[in-house]
Image (cartoon, rainbow, N blue to C red):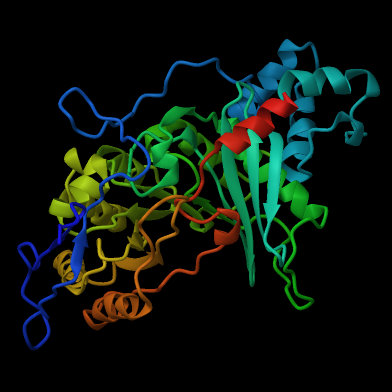
Length: 429
């Protein structure tokens, strides 16, 4: 009988002592290694997984109202030979009424509407495809950008809130082998306005009754209330544009979307210098660290950026975010069968988090959402329950996260433009 090269029987690597009575239960479950399946991981000259931090050179999208500050919008309108107050009117239509259609802007003189919209509200996203769950409460959008790049966003209605998962890059340069987006590589950064436009288009659809799942006694606002930067891309690798978008999200209407910063979650796989910058922004967003392994031995392979900043460095930066902002940090952890779901890893994670204090963190285990052709799958239910139990017993607040959109490949880690998507986009061009 030959040994499967992707697995090995092992006991915990440098396993920690249990904080509860009794030794950690030894495990003989296989340790699946994060070797790639069905695709070739890009490597650098030294054979390490390639990390793309800089956006490839491509044509820039047209300048849009949402790329500009309120003062810059006024100046832009004046450059067009119009009174500055027209900028506020245009902002009201875009950020409050979610429209770029000049025909709806009846407070503007008919003779200038088309010119003003063309100059400040150029088209940014073309809808290629829309997929809905049977209940209609989750919708995945495929968008084509001005240069043909494809991105996706996912709109979800929950009781009392509406969440939009937005993309910040076309593709992703972090090269994580278990993520469909990472397998595609980085096409380019998205502009501030391209990020904001995903929200405006979602709000427009909601206002028109296009999002299902609303109950008669649901009195939530009929617009996006929560944003998660967990779509395509590594948000902190596109730092300036993402933060400019966040500022527009929280700016009062009509200067921005009038959202609560506490309803915005910015995630990262662990770009430590950018986490430290985020802590100094004085914008109380929720910060999420996609950890997925508490030990460098596994995380080096599972999350290639761990070769730059190790687990403890990322956790120190996350704790610093809490210390400076008072905002509890979320730890995202995709549970992958026989890879990172071992009981001793739950104990090690709890130990590392508790070393930094109590009450500063919340862990969100997420059953892995498999991608087409992947051999990896979500952890078994009893293993998942044991992982969650150990964290809770160690005093770490832990909630198994509900996943939406798996049937339409719209869940975490599943967002990727396929060849079928590219063909559909080409047919529309």
